Each structure stands twice: as C-alpha cells, then as structure tokens.
Image (cartoon, rainbow, N blue to C red):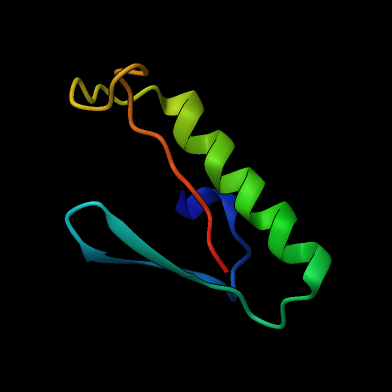
Length: 64
C-alpha cells in the first residue's frame, strides 16, 4: 500500500486490520484516485484471508 501513495502521504496501521491514510493536500478527485490505487494494490497482492468469505483474500473498503 505504501508504494501506491505520494511521498508526502502516509499510511498508518491503527489496529490489526485497520489502516489510516493521510493525503497531503487532497482534492475531491484525488481522494477517489488514491483510494482506488490502494484498493487495487491490496486486491492484486491476493493475501490469503480464509475468513473473508466468499473472497478468501484480504480486501479493502473505503470511507471518507
């Protein structure tokens, strides 16, 4: 995930499965673009997560 954000942005682990993303000078458009890049990176990594039925891999949702 860290490789998908700009140098001034930050990704921080809050808890076991919770992360916080802080974007430097975000715009409404850049929020969606950044969220989609991060979501796609996690999906592409295909991290095993058998408790996440029906996907069986780690997934990510976005909120703002």
